[in-house]
Image (cartoon, rainbow, N blue to C red; front, side):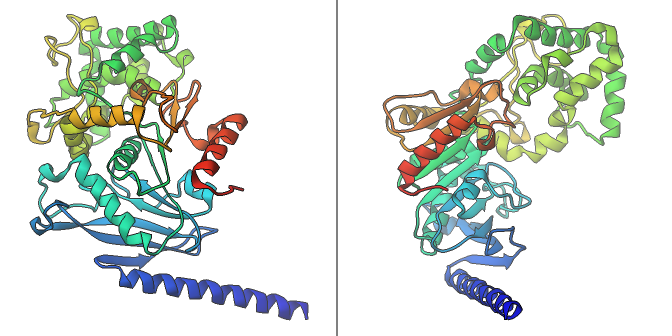
Length: 428
């Protein structure tokens, strides 16, 4: 009897899952302007699909055209909460996010407009705005709210975390909770708080060691140039947006920013005794020369447009390197924004200032998570006792490691307690 009962039970489970999958596909078929293709579902999920959702270029004027936005759907159950992931860039594959896993819920991972496969026929950047992107997520929320009536949560990491905040600002009732991770809110195209952070983070000795590496390489310019060119050739890097020498100087100026952002160790900073080859190799492992090549400047053109138009960004102080920079201008701080086609930077910080003030006075039920050693924590949303939100700062933690899984036991308990209160549900 036991083998029979086991077989019967497994068959029943399979039939129930198949029935729900069939029901989901029927519901997906009924959604307007949604295409879907099944993909393998991870353990614990009932089904998964790659979606294409038609979005207007201009949500205020749908007659101006449309594009298809790539979305990954993970289905855990119609009775489960749903997480919408507001990704900031290209999304070539599906990834399950921590809060969706914690809630054992559904997830919609949305590629940002004008990135990856979510492209219009013609790249008119005037439609790449914070408001239009937020409206994309709202449209998806409205579509899939008919399938998933339980509580909704939004989350995103880094630029995706920025997008989470902006989405909540425009559509505060779309979700019950927002969970942006390592999300900066920049107030200028050259946010001065970045300079303050780099001047004060870590110890005096560590900051001096970083500066000494930069000046060493700049003083040995003629020796490092051929070595760096061979590195670029081996990496198949091309330089038409910037000259090679501009890119190399940018790489050296970027070094401290990337050092702290990605969690490098002060004790591993080399001294001059290691020689030019080792010194250059060390810097290129931390500050990628490819970041300033055509590969990334052109590949992230949409990102740079957003940074230059609305999101804000950072620059590089040149005064500490007087007389050492030959390719970059020294009468002003070079910007880290590389506008498509070398267009002028049209920055308007009106909206980011409004959102910043909203986070301090009105925006509620948002759980912010940052790493205190991450360069982007310089422009983190400050804590405010005027709103029902929560802040989690992981000490001595970088951009990559500032995640839910790395919270201390006490902080994780606090996070879950806050989440349970806001969602009005128990989290196991």
